[in-house]
Image (cartoon, rainbow over the protein chains, first blue to last red):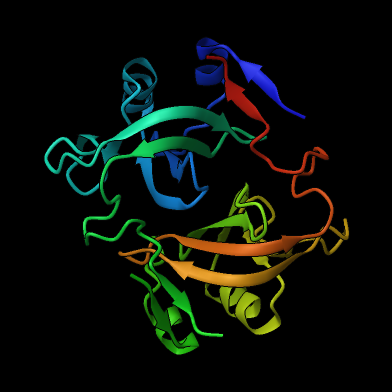
Length: 114
Length: 114
């Protein structure tokens, strides 16, 4: 079960929250590893879709944030997915270098001991 | 690069938002497929860790929501991960049946056409 949407349908189906943001999960397109979660507003989402380069909205800096613009650790979009109710996005990406500012491949490098 | 945390360290590192919630991504432990994203408050997170059954906070119903409690489509926790700044959780799970209320395996069954 899989549906494809046009760019316009995709954008129209996004349910931004009260702050105008939607969470975007970046997943390694090759390995399936979840790399990070950050937020997008409508502008950063449109830029992401148009450029193919993951572009977030930095809530702390209140500004557009093209991933890797300073570090070089860019994320190239392979697939853009939207969930059933439109309030979460998943992007399968080709990650250059580490995704995490700590230098870890993924931001999710800590897990609970079993 | 991987670190393990005790249950107490894990809980202490979660940065809940202004509503007392944190986004939790459920990922199929076998295939790596991202199944859904929902939200947890401190109580639902503690219940999830103690029971091993994914338990969210329903923002629409404002109540605890043990995944599958009515549908039977439960999610058994395999691994619990937390990101670098503590504001997102990832759970690797064993999913029984479809994760999505639409009957789809994953809530992310729509993607943008290439």
